[in-house]
Length: 122
Image (cartoon, rainbow, N blue to C red):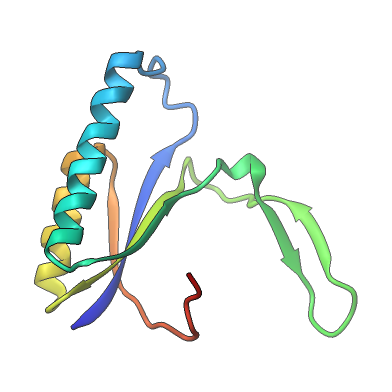
């Protein structure tokens, strides 16, 4: 089984009104159902939501003292809002899960092979 990163994207200030409590409840139910399906199929390894880019800090530097700045500053409206690390037989299987995530959350998904470089601690 291969591992894949499913990155969820959202746009800051997309102009839409904030969701109503009922819409947010329906959203959370769709996400919970999707995650339960992923778990039942043995695909779900890990996932999480991220705070907005205004909460990010970029650390730069090498051997010298690191430089920390607010960030990231990119020329794009979209940013990563969350992610899943899944297992799938192949890219087609990962893309099928990506399509289900899009259906549940209504935002674009980037599917990319994941190469674990270290140990994940629970």
